[in-house]
Image 1 (cartoon, one colour):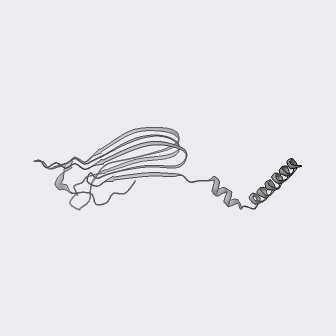
Image 2: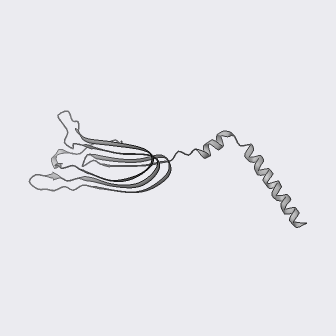
Image 3: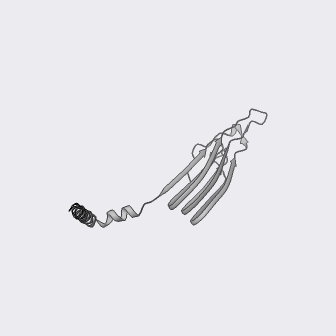
Length: 154
């Protein structure tokens, strides 16, 4: 008799759960199954005039190991050099979409007060891939040149 009661209770519970799931709106199921995954890293070094951006979107799998070192080294010698830098090491395995980008601006403004673009790169990837990349951005400018006031993530 006890076994029959347990089976009966299990059937009633299953019927209640099925009824509750059937009454859920379609948008609820769509929202649960479509997750927008996002992982973004943006590092800026105003002294060097560089910015590095790493972003992953709509990924099913992401295994990443990113190391970014940003440093400001100023030497007070005859030349007054500014050895500011940004070094990024990216190692990742991805199923989805990725964007790696960097931009380097001259820290010395021109006559109009604007900073000249020295270099820029953007790499967009989609699918199943591995990334193994080293990016080194150095300023090598005069210490009297100033710093960048604003850098956008790209």
